[in-house]
Structure formats: C-alpha cells, structure tokens
Length: 127
Image (cartoon, rainbow, N blue to C red; front, top):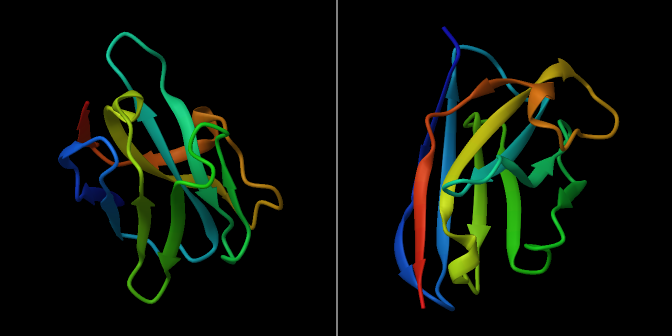
C-alpha cells in the first residue's frame, strides 16, 4: 500500500521558517517527480514546488520562488520543503504528492497528474 505522510507543519510568525517532510512508503519513488501543493480555506489546491525524479531541477510557483526550497533524499524515500521568510498568505494545508508517470521529463504543476497524496500538514503564519 502506497502511503505519503507529511510532517513539520505548525504555527510560526511572519518571517519565520519551517521545514516540511514527506515520508513515502509502499513504493520506491526515486523514479517519480515529487511535488508540494497547498490549499487555503475557500481556495483551490495550488502548486508550490516540484522536484524532478532525478533531482537537480526544481520548479517553483512565483509566489514562493526565492523563499522555498524543495529537496529529496531517495535513499530515505523522503521529500522536503524548506520554507523561509514565511508570510501570512502562505497559511494553508500543505500536501506532498508523487507523480503518476515515471521519468516524466518536465514535472507537472497540475494536481491531477499526481497519483498519490499525503493527508496534509497545516502551516499557519501569524502577522
């Protein structure tokens, strides 16, 4: 059974930092892109960042570029999202997701292209 479990969310003041983790089990994810998405109350789920299956090339939403860093440790089957200079508009439920296609050349920013999702971890940024 494939499972993704996020952790590391919490309450932080504006300007603070958090590091989210996504532990994967039930399948080896080294051949699949791993992405982070977020969803604020009353809004649609939106793309945050994705790291290509081979690592190295990462893509970010404009709203987080320069503040967030995605990484992965394939030996641990774990993905990370380092978030710095957090702002109140970053408040949301954050999800990690695994791509549905192996070796996708250009990682997708579309939620429907991801086959597996975690349960989400809440990030709340106070002003």
